[in-house]
Figure 1 (cartoon, rainbow, N blue to C red):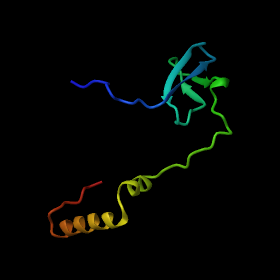
Figure 2 (cartoon, one colour):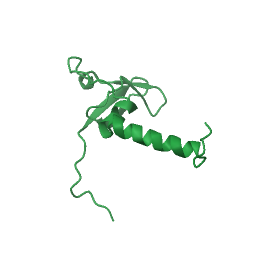
Figure 3 (tube, rainbow, N blue to C red):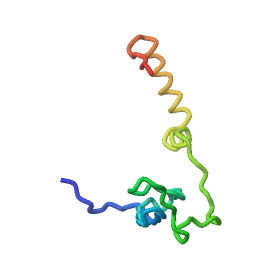
Figure 4 (tube, rainbow, N blue to C red):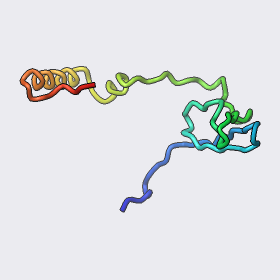
Length: 102
């Protein structure tokens, strides 16, 4: 059985969205560094608007978006990637791998 002992949870924030149509308040817990949307779908199906005091600080520096390629380069060097590519191409050309249909 697994437990939460020794697990370090990510920082979280709770943001509130107010629905003008039905008056409900929707609370959503999000990752602290996530981009918080200005609207959220209420249970009634209408749009709930982010509360003014929960709006993100516009002066906070925005982190550049990382692509899959950026994350891959964090884990592997170009030399390692070239070796993996060569191995896969060799297997493919030898008929030991099948191409996946999209």
